[in-house]
Image 1: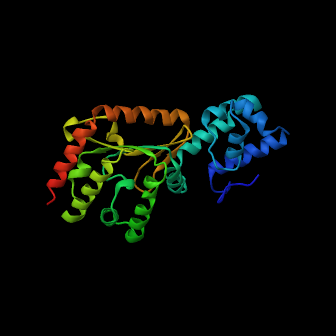
Image 2: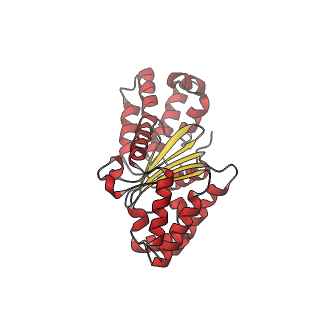
Image 3: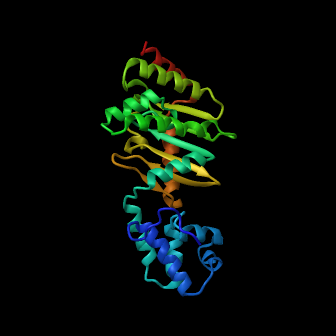
Length: 269
């Protein structure tokens, strides 16, 4: 069994968990199928966990701890790993985004990355003082190819009203960006809704996040300065589904959101 590229149990706690899980299984002389029976999944998931492609879920760690009488070792390691930062999370999120069947995003401060024009992205990177704004802007546009594949992903995007009213870069940049957003919102597989400022406090005020669904499984990426967080544990991803629905409860309907975007565009002549 080959480990995934970049696998390093000396520097990555998730990789250490995967490495030790495989070591323990082999020392106990049991098969992937047996471990799959313990956690209630098939052998392929166990293999993905052991080669570092998929992270061990806490509910599965609990079952392994009970079966192997580890004293809760794997449960503790998974909880500790979930609290740490993994520099590979953003790259993994991009891979998941490119292959997702469904994407649900809530954006509080910036235009969703999949919707940004190159000039908007460049202005955003410049405003944040990020290095390599030119390369970053081009890479962001390249990501958007996933919207044009066949079949395309189903996208539900909810954005805060300030995303369409607060200037980023020049008037021309905002005008082009909003015109681009309108074109995207007209596509049958993309839904864009706006949470008006008049709503006040709501579930989305804590920050932006994205839910990517492939093969019926959700993975969440949350945004934060200095690097976001990738969440694969089903218990946690389900909570983000609930939060996304709560944000949707206070967002304007599609038609009213579309009109609000058109009105915002008219304010950038």
